[in-house]
Amino acid sequence: MNKNTIQRFELSKLLLQYNLETYSLLCKEKDEGKNLWIRKIEDGGFILDAGEDSERIFIAVESGDNRGQFLALKKTDGNVIWFIPGKAYMFRVFLNSVYLIFLDEDNNYFLIKVYVEDGSKIWYYRINEKLSSYTINNNVVKLKYLDANEEILDSATGELLKSY
Image (cartoon, rainbow, N blue to C red):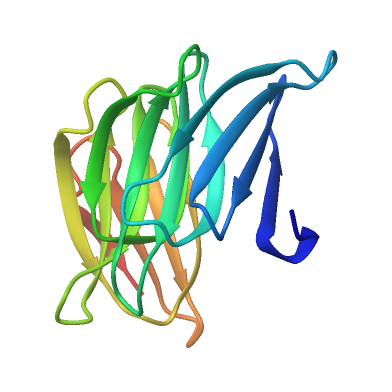
């Protein structure tokens, strides 16, 4: 196993090890180092980021310039609970939702809010490719762009509240 072909991600109680040659993802207990499960990532690729909630592991996989998939895996066995095709650049788990920055096949960027349980879409909002950061709270999502512009969206509906 070549260390240059392995990606490692540390979660709260788990370690993930992804082999870029075999597209296999190994999940281990952090404290004891015990292997919990291993699974192959269909379509392979490179893992951009990994995160978690109490029941799921979330993985953003890139398999081409604007191709990839976003996976929600069951922590206990690594089985796919749900997935969204497409390249997710950034994602954040907040309360019972996942917020994702996605690129579509026409190179348009979107902020998408989905339910954490099943990945179904709550709302989406087209964003500027110059997005530099975003913050989320119970009421609003604040988008900041490289050109100093900002947008504020309603967290519940995705409706634009303010732009400046």
